[in-house]
Image 1 (cartoon, helix red, strand yellow):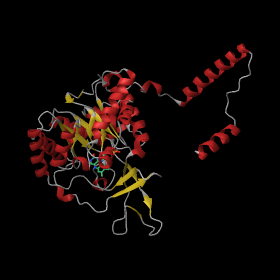
Image 2: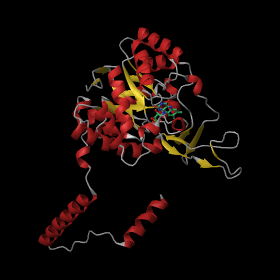
Image 3: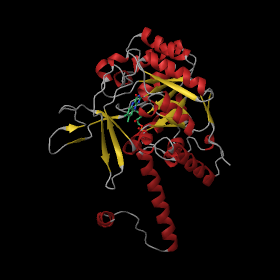
Length: 374
Ligand SMILES: Cc1cc2nc3c(=O)[nH]c(=O)nc-3n(C[C@H](O)[C@H](O)[C@H](O)COP(=O)(O)O)c2cc1C
């Protein structure tokens, strides 16, 4: 029987399924619920020292539905936690008392001041949390205060802030990165060079979900106006997979031993397997929990185990990063295909048949007609 148990940055997880920072980790009650349902670890909702500066609006969600009604895209303009920091410290302490063996990670965000980062990390650490995720990636609201993704897009600042945090704690530190950048490796490299032990990716994609064709207002609409928000759920998975693969290759080549937590549109054990195959050590789920409830982790574990059994993998290490070598350049695809076609032609000639493997325009039209007929 394969095992899902894993050790990441010295943290022992019963399985790689981690609650991502957001509504599913927004207070002590729901975090306790996640542990009871069997989640491998929880990253709590992001906290800051002064919650009075965090003012949420409503509505703050808007959803994109597929033809069958399923939610496949989710935009939010929710900020980090608006609950007082002191309450959070009490709750972290209580959670570690109640679940001493379970992994609780504090997600923190602060302004660009060394004393603020040292204080928030130091005070969280005293509660017994197992590690930190640094939120350098929230794409709405906080960047207006030069926080979140405003920091995450600036490698120099990242390196410096990660250095401060490294000074403040010996526990694992994951830098959570924004996808709203051309090369996610650049700021991630700076975070690792500064002292982060791992990278989490991705946070949400900056987005406008839709425009209401009756009112002409973009959505979600607050008092008649909107602001670009963060996009998540199934629709972002292809972008997340690409960025995780890029990060995994960078970590393999430049920072061996550092870790990677994959996030974005994960809702099943099969999704998780894809992220692990591209080099993630753990997978995080936010919108999937909001859609399906905490209990989905049981199904996800079963699906991942079934995948492992089918391939004869005993541990996550047996297949982590296995699909990375199959990614290459387009030029290499051209070379491989030309070589294969030449070999086919040679084989056909040897058998005395005429080979014609090239796609013609007619063939493309036939195939797209067939697709549109379903
Ligand atoms: C409503 C909502 C609130 C979120 N709040 C936070 C947050 O406080 N801190 C953070 O690092 N990420 C936050 N996220 C981002 C998620 O942790 C995650 O990176 C992103 O949604 C992509 O994963 P998913 O498709 O599984 O939701 C939030 C996401 C949503 C949908």
